[in-house]
Image (cartoon, rainbow, N blue to C red; front, side, top):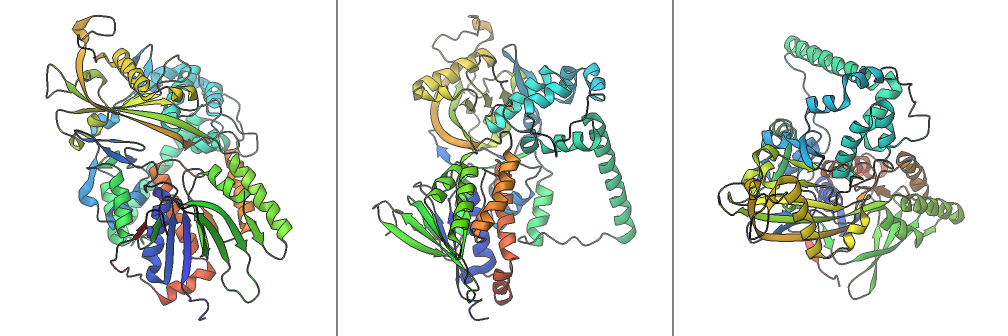
Length: 560
């Protein structure tokens, strides 16, 4: 028992949101019984979650919000970090007003508008489209699915949405990975329309039964999920109902700062992982270890002995690490074969690069007004792929979160590049800004010149704007692409990696979801799995609940 309760060491590869959440949860669960080290190659922690201060307000390099739906885990984390007072909920009207560009102008996309685009005949026809069993047949692309079951118009709308989320190509994105519910509905019910009706009816039935059950029994006690306090669960449940989207008063990097402040860990920045050496357990060992070789800014390689490694770096980065790694075991040839197979699978997960052009604007003739025409104000608009446009879409940050900046400032974020137009990132920063301004001028009627002119040369419809500041972020390989066979790749990894080492876990956006909520939830799952493993359970018996000493994390710039 003494050996089982020795101080453990967990090394987290990657200091983005997924890695920081994992480090925080481990330090919270086990306190000083477990040493945690985070290795991040960049000088800053947080990955793509970077809020950049500007002359007025700020802009975001990466994600600018997280969803309320499916965001319960993230909101629990917000509560535990003490960030409740920093949270901003989106304006309900604005966040619900979303547009897709058709014929050069944003068209509002509500349920009615989508139904009108689909058409009644298409809905009726969908009932008789032959069923496809997505669990047995080859993967189908998102574009192919919507064209087969509905029509090209709806396929274009979904293409725009997927461009906004994945910056991807719906002709390559896998339906089972991107929209698994639709694949399941067709497999089970043979029709999306019938499946949705049955799903809605079942939800109504569950709600009625739940209501009757609560009235009859006075409410059954609901146990919070592990890794969460009852107060955090209650806060997340109530707050999640208030808005569709959430951010923070000073930007999404607030979440990163909260994690760094509350995590008891050694944070190694500007350090890269060279390779791993997996040492399998001998008969006398209770917990095997992995040696992590880390190179610092001084080009010196240092070894870290880890009882568990959480990999929260991009899939292709991990592939490069595994290709240089070694296995020390009784059957190294077999284990190395599994490791190289895992590296090959990781390498097959592609990424897309996106340029974000952020603009801070003043209305020239009406300083306290928003220059965006009222009929186009909302969350933003998305552009269907292959329409000849040079942007993926634009988000109206100041409309969605009106209290996140001074009242006279209009913030817009324009996205360029992605999987369908990767060559656009070869443009210089000034060219990218001009591309964004030209698109906004044509689509929204904004004017950025000294002599305001509308999109057709008419000054009557122009909204004259002064660019207070602009910022360009070139986000290379920032969004994993869940292309065809993605789920098969993940299944192969889930089989191959335990053969290499059971002391290796995957986290981050490359595998189970690309959003902030997805990354946070996955990190919770990884720590939960570790918490319930036999080799780690003894630590909880000795040290639970974890009372984390209030000392700041150790942040080492170049390390040693």
